[in-house]
Length: 263
Ligand code: TYD
Image (cartoon, rainbow, N blue to C red; front, side, top):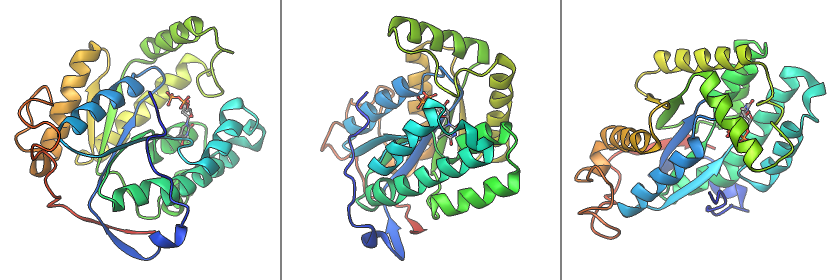
């Protein structure tokens, strides 16, 4: 999946102060091997068929500054900083990503699909022992008011997800699992429970999708959930996306819903 489909803003001052944002911000969360990348590409196709402009991005990374930090984090080079130090790096990467890519894209009215966001820090760095109050502060600073409109949690048992990762690693003859994939099974299972806890605490923002199903069924469940969540914007879209409302066919109605964000 091509991740760099969004325009990076070089002008940070353009997102200062209060802005009314018309775009929609959807994040995907889940453990390793949940199938997020595949499903993001499929949702992007549905939304584009509805005439919307979609920006796909990911964390850690998504902007040039954040991609530099990604390298440090996933290689394990930052592990010696400890979980709190790693959490600070994830937050620094997120701040750059929000300022230079996410907020400008939303301000242009785009739909931003982001592979992981602040919930991943809550789960991964929370599981590693970083206290909730510290995670609260980091999140407040990093997201600068930019919270997801919808978070899609693709839930799979840790064993299933890890088996998929191992198959992928073997088939790509890569260097092996990254810093966070390589943890033991119990750690992955605890992360899964933490994601489910977050979803239970914020049912209006989260939708939980059973990731053990076929990719087609997961895709259909996600598209249904998105149409239901944004029913004011996606009214008339069919089960299969494209259908009656192709690009320019009136699917991209102007947002009845606006968001104010402090950058
Ligand atoms: P990535 O290669 O993007 O994989 P995935 O397909 O699992 O998203 O790896 C990102 C890793 O970084 C993943 O193991 C989760 C971890 N992570 C955190 O620990 N904290 C965070 O805040 C984020 C965004 C990711």
